[in-house]
Image (cartoon, rainbow, N blue to C red):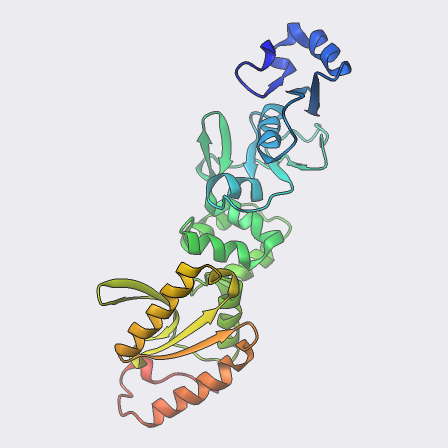
Amino acid sequence: MRFFADSPVIAVRDVPHEANALRALRRRGEVWSPLPGIYAHKSIEDGWELRMLAAHLWAPDAVVCGAAAAKLVWWQDLDVSTIDLWGVASKRKQPAPWIHTSSSVVDPDFYRMETTMKIAEPNLSVLQLARSAGGTAIDEALRRGAASLEEMWTALGALPRWRGSRSVRRLLQQSRQKPWSPLERDAHVRLDKARISRWVGNYEVHLQGKRFFIDIAFPGMKIAIEIDGFEFHKDRASFDRDREKQNLLVLAGWTVLRFTSNTIHLLVPQLSALLRDRFRGSERTSDPFWAPEVH
């Protein structure tokens, strides 16, 4: 069909002289309309890719934000049910349940151009996503290297106050040690509440020429805490690498404690006991890592 030679979806405004023909094709079931004024060939099934194209055609000057922007740029395997568009005139009605619109304007510093589509930068989309996904969005962005905490704080400071900004600010404050998973975030919160300090999150070490990251480390005392979230250790390669890391840490003189979602409640009592034992048995009180605050 000549209308779809270049794209699986078209906007009537781009071919106004063919409007009547497209409507006739729709009545005959040859095309269908995912959004007002947008047509797709009958062979094109509804789905993420089509909806993204249709949303862009419906509001070509809008900025794709939130979960949709995250999926497009840095979290490709994220399941997305709605597409957030910012910069849409308030008089335009929401065209479909899977599109959320906002008249909020996005500063050009916080979106990028992908061909003709404006997409929120990761430091903005992660904040928007955190309103619904909580700390998981921040953890995932940090783990993937999509945006740094500093970049997220910059974006938050540039945004006007919006619903949910206070909770996002609190999540960023809890992220100062850069957790990479919900379980790591839980561990960080537990350590903070117990007033255990002088630890480092995702501490980089080099062992026998290989680079690893310790989930929580007390470098001065060579104590490594590994947080075993099943979702990040379910494939064989990750499982094997994690065991290699533990062996190399032990060979290098580290003490390793491991916790899962079922044993995370033991983190503070077991770690506190180890820290007290190490502190009593050492004279290296001048080393800041040898004076943990344990209450």
